[in-house]
Length: 334
Image (tube, rainbow, N blue to C red; front, side):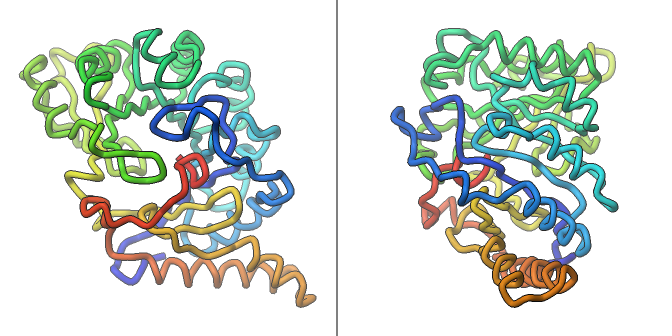
């Protein structure tokens, strides 16, 4: 389905929990955030119903997120059920990697199309510090296991001044050696995110080109997101890995935005920047309370989806620090 600005919206990010087993310092305070009770979040049955309605209007690609999605029991089964819905083209998952290895076989059997793994340092002490106690070895072992299984694997890294900016080229070498994508993401003013602590991707690219002067634009399609990719030329590439730059602050990509976000509470957000959204959980329950049959309930969800897409704004205002979104990323869906 196209929004009012002619953009094709075919991708939905679905948060299934606000809970996480890490305490990343740019995401939430050390004491954590107030947890939402399980009876308030969307059930898997409700998520599947929303996905069916989404497919009917042309949204065929889904990303499962959290918090940390693997802390919610039954996550892998949900992946399988969404994959089995008629018309679904792709289901991927974002994770911090701490609990990925024990679930990897089930995810592979469920038909997962790709994994995005958050990793902000390749150094144990830094990783432990930034995550509030995470174990780097868990993530590195999981990445190797994903590669061995042939699962499309991407690493997401938030670059921060005076923290991990000296690891830019280390991450590039990691990407080229492993044959995976590493994406550098600019910090956005959402929740506890402070762009003043972040490094621009223009600076990151400059440093990469000093180390790798032959770095070239990569025109291959790497997924659903807005990253601009770079790779080494064929004669220098070892395993074909690439570096992606997601530059929400310095190079807006709103004109090609193809996504909407569904929080664990059922709020459908047409844009990450703004607090506004549509309460799909209430829309679903309201339709059920009126006594309509299953077709009526599905139509109510579809109508709510379509109306939200029509209200999708032309662009964000992150660059002006004018965002009014107070929630942490773990509450929205990372």
